[in-house]
Length: 368
Image (cartoon, rainbow, N blue to C red; front, side, top):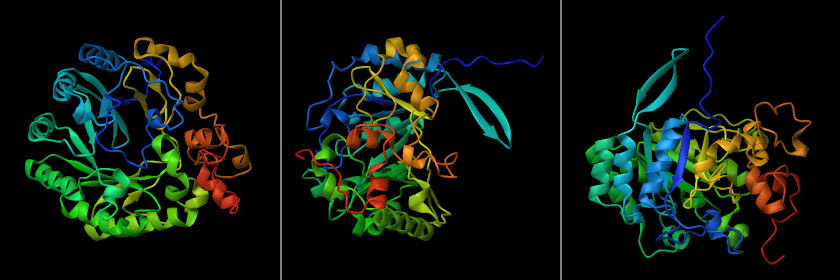
């Protein structure tokens, strides 16, 4: 009888740790659920440093092997470097496919730091260098930077840190949240980031949620604009001979016929299957876009019995309108959390698909 390994937990291998609610930007497109202008998200007390260390230890013991530090703005968390150092001192269980075989090893968890760059500093950057932490910096535009971030800084700060990280050998990603406001300068934005030394591109199409609910009509991309986004990014990446990915799933019906060599576009939802979130108060969520708080990290193993978590983990969320589609095994029908936020049901259409199927229907506004 072949040996069978018992799974350590129900958790995906990647955890996103939202260290703080605080942020020094007021991005119009921000989907952090605690920024919902309707006040529907309950902010709990932020975890202390010892609690975060306990959380990280527990996650590693349950099989998590990748940690992303974010917020809010994680550089505002005073003990950020201490937490990163602590995580690096632990041994995680890594499983990877190599030449068609599953290879297992033990070693420090992979670390990613996601920041807007405004309060990034040399100490943090050198910590990233020493721990081989991947640095992701948000660059939501050039001319539109201040309008979108609500800050008095400018994109030169982000470009400066990308150049400095390259000098130190720190691997970087330029993260671009794409809206109707910055779409026209997307190619220029990507080009500037890659010229400054970014190794990789992450695109996120705007999805209603958080503070972004106040500007949905101004920011949400139409289906044809989503196609323009993908074509523009593919062209810019090809010119720079770089790779990129789209972090927010896009239904196949929006990308039918598009070919991509450098930009990875997924139509599958990764929530609760490839990653999950621990919020500032220690409550878990299926993804960073979700406003639904689940078990506290101290009771994280109860997630396997949570109906909300199970719907994602078992992929029981296909929109009703997608049931006749022959591609439903390859596509999850878009973002379920956006559907839930806008239409009140996880099984409703992704808002972008709705605008394609029903061109005259507008997305609900807060004052409707």
